[in-house]
Image 1 (cartoon, rainbow, N blue to C red):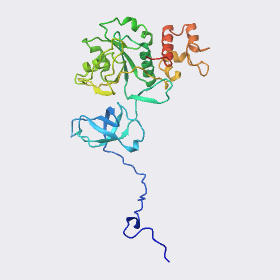
Image 2 (cartoon, one colour; image 1 turned 135 degrees about the vertical axis):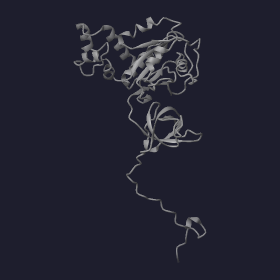
Image 3 (tube, rainbow, N blue to C red; image 1 turned 30 degrees about the vertical axis):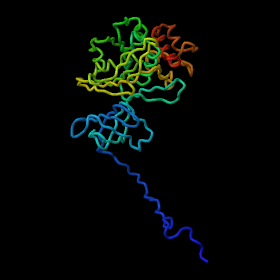
Length: 340
């Protein structure tokens, strides 16, 4: 007696299912020789706004929306990245291009959420200058974040610049005495004042503006880039803190700058983790002090409580400036002190 069939001829399961295609994978990958180059302007929920090189010509839009190609894997794409992109570059509504390559970064500004957080977060790529914006009053300046931002700038190989706002409310001299020995350049601004010196510092460079909420970052951006239209917040009279108005980093080109300078406005922050910064990396930003630590014992952090530190010997011998060593050690200590 023949075995009983499970399915009848009228059941679709009776027929053999198509086999999975097993076409061998090729090692050849697209060269994307015709890919356009662009810079990432902002990032929002997996979509990237780009400004292509040569925007406005040959049907290329001023702003192009793009997604990340699968071969990039988990590689982060951040504001300031130089990328290669294919697909629809018209910038029309509904169009979507594809990022196929992130070029090598010159600099990377990073932070961690907290000092015990092992995960680094890249804020901006390829910037040359970190502009630390702090108000001289309303809200009162907090040196904790300023020190940490300077540490991050030195670690990233970026040139720091202090931008002191609201000089019409307080004298900047008392604040500047803390940073003069570090050789950090600064500019002083006030509401409605002349920004010529700041514009000169920004011209031809990629700069990131960083600071607490309420210090006047968005006001500065709107003055530097009139069509930026960044929302301006106010300082809470009770807490002395500002409200977050910039919700994401955004890159803008500086108008009337023949050298193509650009700035990035970042969200106001209240903490800046530095778990990724090591003492040996920080002191490299101070060549005169780094030279004095060549004979330090292994594992020396060059802090105040380190025995036989070369900085202490240099101070005793008069080879190092005491104010400069004190300022460096303050930055070193900022890695483990609260920034809010």
